[in-house]
Image 1 (cartoon, rainbow, N blue to C red):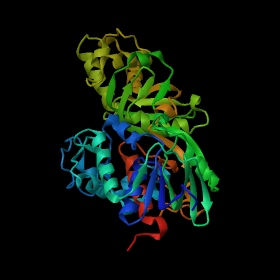
Image 2 (tube, one colour; image 1 turned 180 degrees about the vertical axis):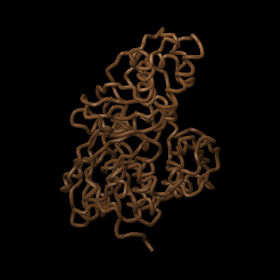
Image 3 (cartoon, rainbow, N blue to C red; image 1 turned 180 degrees about the horizontal axis):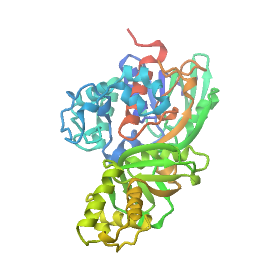
Length: 440
């Protein structure tokens, strides 16, 4: 080594969710570990996530709920817990890649990690697991305390300016010098939330070593839509709707039943964020439309019968006879979209008008204008090709000693804590696998 050079067993590039877990595990197994973080402080995205509450993982990955010390929302169906396969299912076709990582560090292990440090957790109605305190700062504090105890060294304001192969591993260019490391773990994220410092630099590192990149696109991102009436409804929430992205042939590309929120720019909420990847991955998003089932719990036949009965029983306006849980402003939109006069009186409602109203309730069509892009995307779809990474170790198939974890990989899951679980699990597995496995 020359003057100013330091040598480590493991260099972790990026101190986010995946990087911190990789560093903790490697250091606890006796490796000398340095973490390079470009920001002033680690875990910036952790602090922003979940509305600053940090959705740790999802209860659907649990085999039982005994580890939860905080409250469990009565709306959560405890029968939904199906173990690791439900976590993998949230990642679609790429989900099986996570099998070894989830075996190494499961949802149960996640709860033990945080609950064991005194951080109580709770389950919300959709299976999302949060800290009972609702503070992401508490999550990060647990991780940083564990990191400090592990002996890993964190270097903030220290971006990795380049990585080159070396006779004994890798040479990492950092401000003011060079670090030498026997192995490298790349954990710099993708392109989502660039305000956190994510700028796609992990892709350049991967390409430097011959890796191919699946074209990165924003995912879990709000949608922009054309109709002006949508923005007029800003602030309104539909707690239970089914959102579907449909192409011009009528084919449904992706559907999700969850909450929908109207905003000044268009639509957001869990259902919208989950189906957004179908928009960003489509060659012509302007040719797509969003279809909202406003009352997914009701069959069309039952709605038609109820509307017919209500219309015959009084002389009130039809708009007031629509499903009682539907906000009045949405009911008015339904009437307009169904081409039925808003002041139509119940007994005057024709059979054809009634059927048009029911069809609109079950499939309100909204043209898609695009998304808010990476600036508002919670994760990145695309990244380092999974075919070139060993799922058993997170190690590159092309260059030994180089590992990729977390969002830099071509892995993006549904909203609900799934992406954080992938970060914890891939990070832990990489930390356990560097330099040939555990230290005896």
